[in-house]
Image (cartoon, rainbow, N blue to C red; front, side):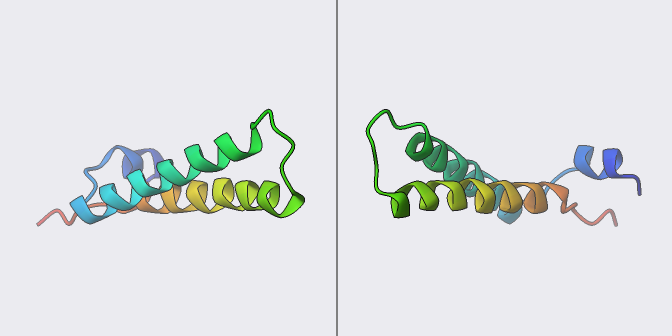
Length: 69
């Protein structure tokens, strides 16, 4: 199965939920990183880690396909 076909195939419900949680992590991390207020370095780093973790979770959850039986 090619990667394009895999991303177009139906995704199981559990992995759709994980994908949406990953998108939420990306949004939260982006809000922290783009904050106009000067934040401590630890919080800014946390925002970056949230973006990376959310991106990985979203990509992996989206690439899982339902069985075709």
